[in-house]
Length: 115
Length: 109
Image (cartoon, rainbow over all chains, first blue to last red; front, top):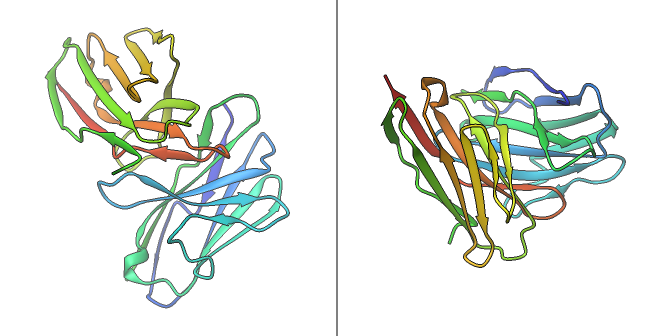
């Protein structure tokens, strides 16, 4: 199947710093990518839809100024958590569809810990 | 009411057992349905899509009842390697996915 990578896989940062997470589709182009967040023992929650060449679409309750999304190319979307706080500590996962069917391909996730 | 509801479990079953998971969804306009598997601290991986006609893949059978807005997953002859969290997933439009909270399965020797 199609491959989606994420970088970094794990990050620990101090409160108040910003963290950038990259999501790349390695063998296909994705005009749309999705960012999810998963708290411990909870389900994945869609944060936003990343659209290549245009603004991201954010879900209700997700602050667009705090979670900056840039989808500058057909293979790369970035999520920047600005001024991170401990409550932002979570597992962030991106996904993309390769246009060949219904399956979404997920990146391996980024575990963010904010101290 | 949650958009996708699942029994969180855990389901503790012996090897070789048959186990069934159920899921209900609230959006009657949903078009696509899936079961994903998620291992601890890993990303979810597609197990199978779910169709109204039902579909089977080896030991796994999935069924969809649109009238009742109900999805099921049956696992036969459970293996130790089946231990994971099973996520009921509904495509809510724009290809964005809505996940249930997952049902944890622990298969014991």
